[in-house]
Image 1 (cartoon, helix red, strand yellow):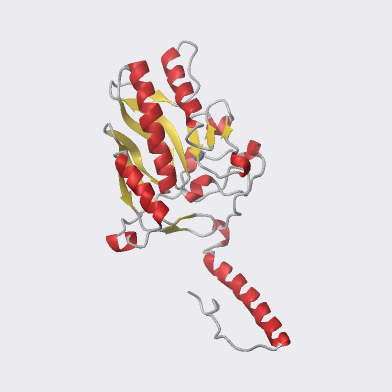
Image 2 (image 1 turned 30 degrees about the vertical axis):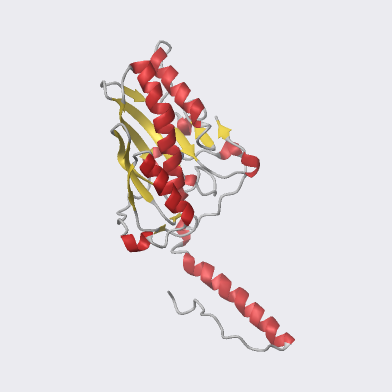
Amino acid sequence: MPAQCPNAQPARRFQPLFRRSILFGMAVGLLALSACGNRSETRRIASASGSGLQRLVPSNPMMVGYPRLSLPITGADAATMPADEVACRRALKRLKVRYQDLAPINDGGSCQIAYPVKIAGFSGSIEMKPAATLSCEMALAFASWTKDELAPAARSRYWSGVKTIHQGSSYSCRRIARTTVASEHSKGNALDVMRIELKNGRDIKVEKQGLFAFRARGLLNTVRADGCSYFTTVLGPGYNRDHADHFHFDIKARRNGYRACR
Ligand SMILES: [Zn+2]
């Protein structure tokens, strides 16, 4: 930490004027501390606000960002984990999710995950490729959707299990396209699904399907609509050009529990 990041002052008995100057000093100190948190100007991102849903256009999957070399964490780190994170991992295990805990991610600004997990696959030997770096809450939402919606929809329409979910972006330090708002990807709370590969060899791309592609269209429409019960944002083909070739799922918290399913 740089020298200008202040340390705490010892307690004293203050005169009013002295107290005011201490308060001013604390304010300056807080500003200095927040500046210490930013690694560079280019990475600074405004915190997410509830502004215009029309502007929710993230995920050019070609902008997947900077692949990370995240390290698995040790048992010692897990010992200090908050109760909700512990409970979330218990739920992942119950769903037979294949995951690994990663060291905390902090790329400055909103680009942080305190307790990230790396998801390699789900029950039913469903693989996630490439493995996705997510918050545990998002991983759990996605695992539940995969088990209870995607896998049954593939079984009923194609008589096949799901082999691989091909994702285009999980954690990624970036803004929503053409805005200054941090994408939910920058908190590990979003995942882009590009393609669903079935065990019978079928490959279903997430894109607008042809007029006679009844089964593919039915599957994609069903799992997309059902996604609204698991995520707070579901965007895909037909919403706008940015989402013509993938589903974007995220768990952004909005006032009044509003969900954006487009
Ligand atoms: Zn996305």
